[in-house]
Length: 148
Image (cartoon, rainbow, N blue to C red; front, top):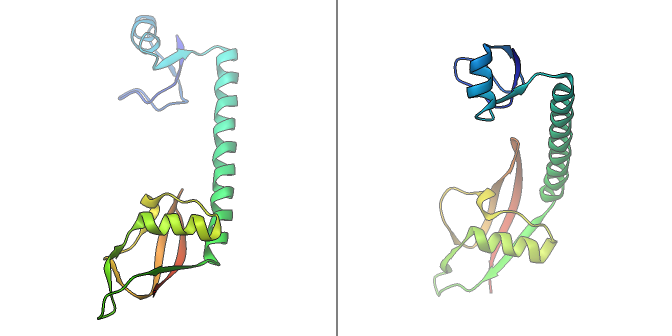
């Protein structure tokens, strides 16, 4: 019996492969646990259409991320905050504050978890932050912290 693997199966193959298996193993285990489907022409056509749709969606997402990266590269984000007598900030600037200010000032919405910075932002000055956009795409954001 020929089956199309829907999920990776240890010691058999990866998703998308067509394998020849014994009838009992195919029917009872692979098809029974939704790890595979019987490899009919209709199932193969449906699988190929689904894979094509996934690739197109991923390409569209990558294009959208590259567009957002280009937009972010030219942005200079300014955050004004209170400082003490010695010029130090009260607390520090958080990733959430950076994401909120970016949305307010430039209308760009990013996830706070994608912001990378080593160390706390506890002083006024200029900082370059790395934004992990996904799919291996990184953007640089220039941040300026000013005292009120």
